[in-house]
Image (cartoon, rainbow, N blue to C red; front, side, top):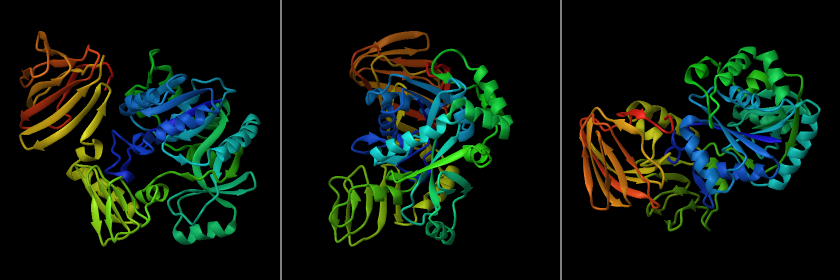
Length: 455
């Protein structure tokens, strides 16, 4: 059995913790483990191999975390330059598998706490999948929830899929005893899914086949942007599950959450004696039932039922129960300050990390850390000059046509428009301070002439 992990998403509902280039599945929320790492570990116990379908910009995050948690073997990657929703993502993964291979489709950003029950559920689903059914996993609802889709069933037989309801309808669903939360987890044979996709959404299948045939042989498998743009966007529910006559549902209580809001995150975190879910060191004076996620010392006095999310460059304060409105904040920020939606002050890159220490009109100061054996792309900038000062390690720096070593406390200057690169050929990280000076210091002022990661 193969686990297909769907690893896209932009993380807007957990902003500012989650950003486009660091979505929630990679944030280490539980015992210094990410949801992606927990997904790998959980499904490695029942699947022989794994296919991760990821956005190209998130590939190195997935690769690093897979290596970090010891599950890098038997994982292959399919990288999408743009998202086209779940139906094409699953099709692209299935096209590379034997038709009789049973696949377990799982999101990368869901929390499942009852793994014993989850494994029992997967065992039951496999029996249906071996009989050529498409199996969806239903979750016994704990309450009337308007943030989830629902599956209506008569036993194992699916009657209908329902969109996210209003509260009155959700309450009616709960009373019926026949409606279950739609988890977004599926199991079926790869060939059965492709056959049903051909029947109900042939344009998706045909364009996916074309895109897959045009992939190069080198790993990871990268879909070409022109091919991806031709693929219609659609979810597996709309494209196949709502139309197929081969659908079964397995229902269980696996203690599941999609962590789709700060309200749901609060529900899953440990609380103190006053009901506060907070970082270590949080000081609470007559404050109750608050969610506090912060990178610095936070103290509250006489406040209840608030969410305080502090991410150095952005602060979100909201009443609990209003978490779904975070996406409205992000929509406004995409117009006013789009960069803050995409990147944390500390951003991960294939070669390491950078942290913005200070930014103002005309200049920006960064701390850059380059991993051993890694290098930045060969690049140039049109709107800024750069000064590099090495703090630790030894850097191989190319500026124009000259290459030289920079040791701690040594520096170099890069003129606007000059081609340059930094490499770390040593055994320890290279740490440097970069001072950018110019009329524009945005992250998109870069021309990559040669890029190992094709980013």
